Image 1 (tube, helix red, strand yellow):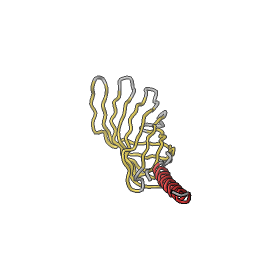
Image 2 (tube, helix red, strand yellow):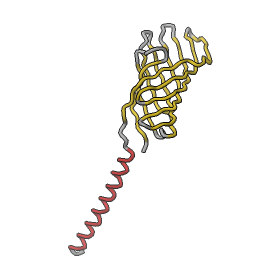
Image 3 (cartoon, one colour):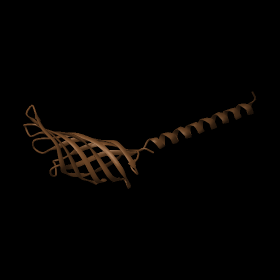
Image 4 (tube, helix red, strand yellow):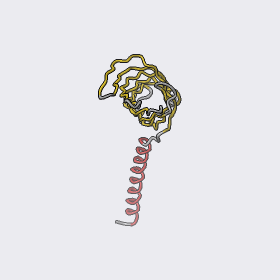
Length: 166
């Protein structure tokens, strides 16, 4: 192989490597959306208590609520929730939200799950995570915390890290 042939072969290998590198870099960039911080408040009113019973000194409550998210994620929310009210006054909770929301200028429907507790002194702490999203919110994923002191019955603040799939 003469010098010119070796040079041409080296150029072809270099062009191939650069092309592969560009394709891989583009793919990584397209799928590595930076998470964004979103925060705000929520407030709900009980629509119906669907079940109340006692077990081991605790009160178990299932209920449906309606309310609002306000802030970086905003909209009308339907919620189902299960509570365990302990004799100490502490409350454990878990449930799901379905929100017709606007997030980052996009509108659609999101579904989340949440769980946590309210201490006897009213301090709210818990977690929230996305389950699904549709419409303009398709591809939205998030997880974060709900906290307080509660700003009223069935109310508090949220702080989430979110991103949209490309």
